[in-house]
Image (cartoon, rainbow, N blue to C red):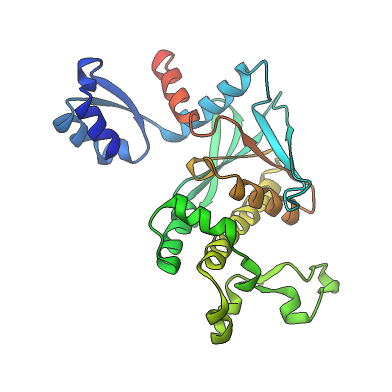
Length: 278
């Protein structure tokens, strides 16, 4: 509603009477924009705009840092670095859009894609659980807590069950066996901090996304995976956790790819659709 109020207070209708809009809000708040701000919404498909924007921005970046990159050594703070990744001949690619929930798209060309699957456990789950478990009230506060916490105090690890590695199936002792599994013990519940709970929530969400994405990549026979979505805006911690999860679940065969201009792809795609309808 903040943007709606700004549109009314700044008299956007005196500059232009139509706004491009995507997603559920384009339908939910359409009458509010019309009655409160005297603005009409030009509704466009969210995923169409996202894909068109991603492909366009990557194609026009010709100087400076590469649009696409990945993290090398994502779990090692002292040696974790950005590495550029060229998206030349990008098809096919798996596009993982993380917002309140998650949609996973197999993209074969600008106009040929399908939604493979998704999960309801996304950014909204992270914030909702953090609000319940820690009393925080904003996404930024939840992320700040998570950056200071230690998830291994909350999760039950393989070594907590086997005393070390589970060698028969190649499971290292530090792997998570049960998210929040240590919280069955009152003694351990009493010893964890709110930051630990926030970190464990984030690890649970990103591990789940990484696992599902890896299975989709195998099923679709796609080895290029790009993560996008508002959940990743100014959220390096989650990107590194996703990079680690993808590396772990794929045994080093898949890299989690990210984009520098996260947050703008839908807007760029909507502008392109307005100027050159598909």
